[in-house]
Image (tube, rainbow, N blue to C red; front, side, top):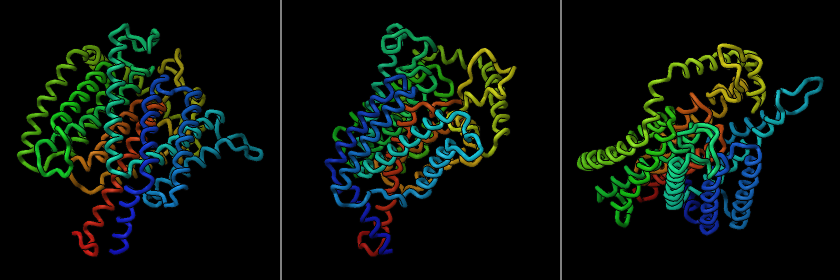
Length: 461
């Protein structure tokens, strides 16, 4: 018990005392990076992958210098996050093995260049996750990051509506696809919808947390003008909800609803009066959102009634991808090689007049490219993160906010990946990684703080 208390105290010291100025600066750099990464077409081009890898490397260098100068240990150690480092390392090693020349054998990957690019992206996500994890262990900084992230997401939503209403352009240029749908700075409306769904989850979670604080005097956080915070969160939620409906993405809206259901389940007030008041105010917010949806939802409602052909085509695609997996079930065709490999099984009734560069199911894509073993490593990492988030101890709504947001974002990404490829778009993935890392850091902080409080040897129970 004494050892556990010591670990908890050490974690709290690391959260509050490790180079605060450097980490504050690093937190701002993370926010600036996240603000800009969606602008160049969702960063869905090899050039932007290389640029972002360089920028994340610079962030890592800044963190490394601050860490070495402090003379202290890492705030979140590798052993604190269980299987994650091992699974990530195994994934990177396997991607490297796929492009290594074997004596008398061809490459395991049918597209070595694409596999190297996938390795570059994977390393970028891993380093970025590690940086945000370290920066977010401080509770005040974690909440600040989430507040600023919500402001950025709301700004992207408003920009998307402005571009849609002023000529349906992409940063002033004529769009070539998804005319009449809000796409923001992305090309694909479904990827943009997933990006907005993260914002809906964050705004909804913050709205419920601020609402509970405004209705209860037991919350240990002292917010100035709590109803102003509720109003700002409600405005952000309405803007994001209205924009995601304007994307006309059916599964984007469905994934956002799944994420918000998870948030609602984690945010039910324990005090009866607070529950009743929260329902009354939430009803007003839903009415406001409903009004926004009516203004923007005509195209979405029309698409909901004409789904037979698109789903029949999608099922044909999935059947052929499963056939592709059966050809190389254990080695896969190489990371990033789906477009090339799929030509081996592509046939009618699936349209042959277009290039199928995505499986429209990220799980099937992983299995076809990496095989049935390595292809399960990323889902295993996400399950591990979800388990650690779900096991985080309770507290006030605001204390739980980063964990609640991370669980909602995980639900959005996991559900939308069943029918699309949004997490294969780098800007979406970087936001996904950042919000998960922030939530996981606070789950670790809450766990160590609670274990220290429950330890009778500390005398603070």
